[in-house]
Image (cartoon, rainbow, N blue to C red; front, side):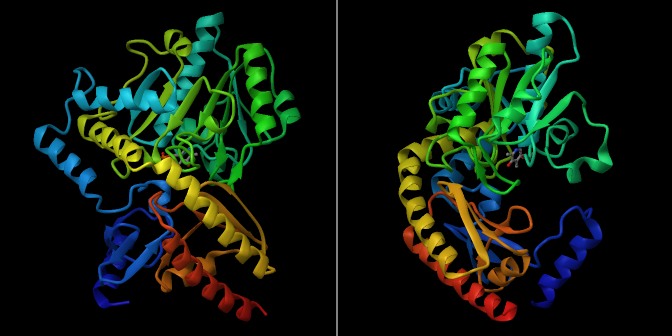
Length: 404
Ligand SMILES: *Cc1c(COP(=O)(O)O)cnc(C)c1O
């Protein structure tokens, strides 16, 4: 590493609160599926800023749309209407098949809003306030206090207890454990359609359908967190669309603005009419014209470029290649995922492999200690998959020799 890069890293470690163990690289710019550090070294990017930059870097149409909006107005507050918000909401409603949209600044805030909507819905029914939410073990929903309270990983929560309270945790894909948590106070069941941080676990169709039926029977709201698995990543706009069900509330973020911080929670008209109302919820920035111009352009470009069809095709190729790596190395025990959200499961920690890949010009990330996660830009090609596999395979070979 050059002196300048080291200087920036040292300075960052002095000035920024140390809440991340960062990889030893200072990134400077991106182009397509490549990122470059400040020394000009190229990296093939299979992380996309954690499932965010779906369209690839330096997309001219996306950049031009943002520049045009910057020259008009960036922010107005939610007390006034603006055209980008109307366009973004119209488009988002169409692809999500939901009815009402609230734009947020992040995924965690979308979860907060979903929780508030669910509590208000239950409150309007019986006038009491001690309703419960069922969330899943090994889930991840964000770092704010409400989102943390429904995150099924005690390690993330421990130092920050008590959370918002009245949360029960069931086992993902285990309907009996959900049933065991249900009572008269249950107002919502919350789950990721594909668990991300928890280790890339897709929901099982049978489980999802049983949960949906249970919610219908008891007027419990089904909240699906599509923050990571949504926005075309699985080959569907939203992963639940693969199954013959629909949530009552849904959260989306990450790729929604392709890098401009924006999220949303959406609901059916029924929930919209019987939950949050004027004065119940708000945000200064949420859905500002710049963020919404990004959302509107992203959704337009997804459609123009047939991103969903592309993901279905290229992900089949990625799965095949990952499966052959899994077959080749004994320490890889499984491959699982949906579309371009894949996990390669190891019988040991993957940190050394991720560092070796970075050294060799490939950006990868983990999901838990033993899983390499693949969440590349959705525009990757078969050739990008080949390049990724070639680098990873050579790292795996070295890893095997070192571990022999
Ligand atoms: C990333 C993520 C969140 C939190 O989103 P932030 O924008 O980081 O607040 C919530 N849920 C899931 C499933 C996520 O992957």
